[in-house]
Amino acid sequence: MTNREQEILNWIQENPFISQAELAEKANIARSSVAVHISNLIKKGKIIGKGYIIQKTPFISVIGGTNIDISATSYSPLKDYDSNPGKVNTSFGGVGRNIADNLSRLNQDVELITVLGDDFNSDEIKKNCKVLGIAISNSLTIKNSPTSTYLSILNENKDMKIAISAMDLYENLTIEYIKSKKELIEESQLCIIDTNIPKETIEFILNNIKTPIFLDCVSTTKALKIIDLVGKIHTIKPNKLEAEAISGIKITDSASLKKCAEFFINKGVKQVFISLGEEGVFFSNGEIYSHHSSFKTDVINTTGAGDAFMAGIAYSYMQNLNILESCINGIACASIAISSDKTISDNMNLKNINTIKEENL
Image 1: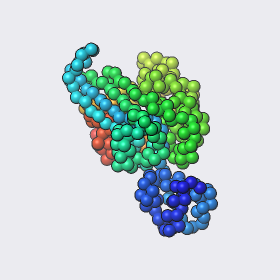
Image 2: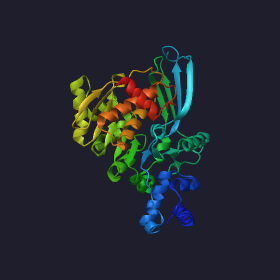
Image 3: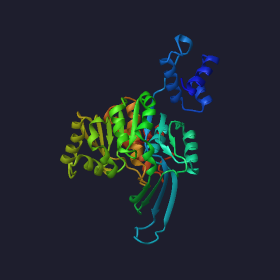
Image 4: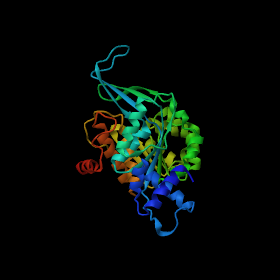
């Protein structure tokens, strides 16, 4: 029995009717983590009979990147080798963290497994996760290292022109570390991973974790990590370029788009959502091959659209919604994201998602 399990058992012995929320507050951890510890205590025979009735709360595990986002937008067409007037925004970022952030705003319990440095940015990220209700106690902190940083340059149309990713820290999310969290991950109803983590770690997760896996490709380069593992993914969300890179199929028209989706389905993927930017999303589950247009919205910043879309389809999975409803929720979330100058919109919530759907459907 671990020290944490002994601590929780002691509190339960003192008050057999204590709630998971109260235990979470006492231990300063997420309610989902408490549920895992209690489940372990039952398996070990430490909690027997009717003395403690557990109401397990479904939660989503997210394994991926966390960093500081610095986004710079030019007021006019970008000029190479010159100083471009514009504005700069700094925010918490990282694909995994962004997805977890969006999910927390959709009232989902989230366990984030990531890697941080031990600097000021790391402390601020941890504080922010606590405010949002994102459990981060199972993440890794690397001593004497800076937290990862993502710097993006946007043109006058708010489209990303170029970006720099300082993310070597993610190499510390090794197979051995994920093995130590395997039980927690398999307690979750859904596991979302991004390709910022090492290829061998992704391979271990896909080959050894029983929980359904949703995968975010992140970029065309990082998407290549999963070419030989596609069939083990439950749901994948590539953009057009990422889908082409993985499948080897050039998307030029509706026929080639469907052929590309079929590639993923034939490999064993249960759901594929191919983002086409302002043209919407092509999606399939093997029975349905369809396209849904984007919703009309003022585009301010496209950086967080993909992360928001992933949160929308993950939320839909937790609600047992069909693939069309999932796609619509994903598009609604992306619409909220791109209408904000922040990577994560303050307007991301279920009420606004429903409002957007009512206005566009």
